[in-house]
Length: 109
Image (tube, rainbow, N blue to C red):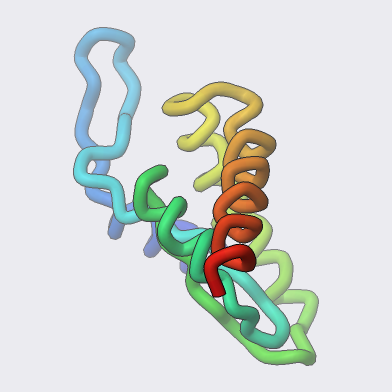
């Protein structure tokens, strides 16, 4: 589980921020991991790119506790980075925009 988190952190390309002596992502390649059956998330995928992350499906319908814990750790780190970038309510605004786009897609198709 720790190895997945470390691999994720090193793959995001962190750089040192001299201003507040912390590490911030440079050229973010954030991942939001999903489990279960894949869904048609075209609107979410488009918005995710705008927010600087991508969805990745891992596992299938049956997910072990170890995998679920690893997914939660990666998603927690991604969420914390997105909170720093877009504010605490980024997820709420993201979902609101997804609903709006999905409504527009239903009207046109």
